[in-house]
Image (tube, rainbow over all chains, first blue to last red):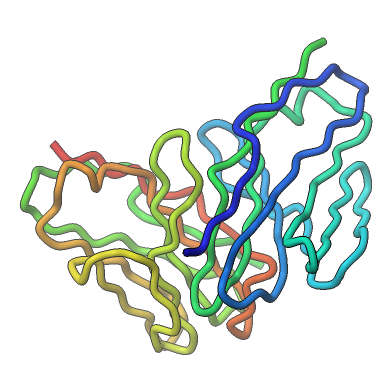
Length: 108
Length: 113
């Protein structure tokens, strides 16, 4: 079957760094994407990795290891507005699969 | 440049009825995908349309069907509504059938009573 696994919840302190992991099992793989969704809002695109390595976009970075079927999203200098759900997603074959999401709680 | 728009924003139906949800893709995008998102869950892929043809489908029954029009807007139709169909329905657009960066609309919240 095809699946993505990510932690259901993560808690961190404002100003700190947090890493959200994602492991996947898919038939066919093009790349790993990350999305942020605030309560009541739509998912918004954060980053995409097609090749192994680290991609950096401001405070957010994303990493991919295709051989390990693993990736992570790194959020630095956490702000209260980063409190949201984060989803990893892969395109496997002719399907787009999302993880169940990681709820990020930020403490002041 | 206009973003992805969905209508209606909220809808209440009763079991057994049919519903049509609409989506206008972002300017310049020719690919639309639809998702069902239950509360506290990730989006579940329903299907995707590229240049008016369905080119991918998730594990949803045939009563979930869709269309894409020449202007690349799209409809999601659900027949014989069931209580479990209550969810947020999201539409996303992208270009050239590529899905590494999806632009989502705000969704339609469907309640089936």
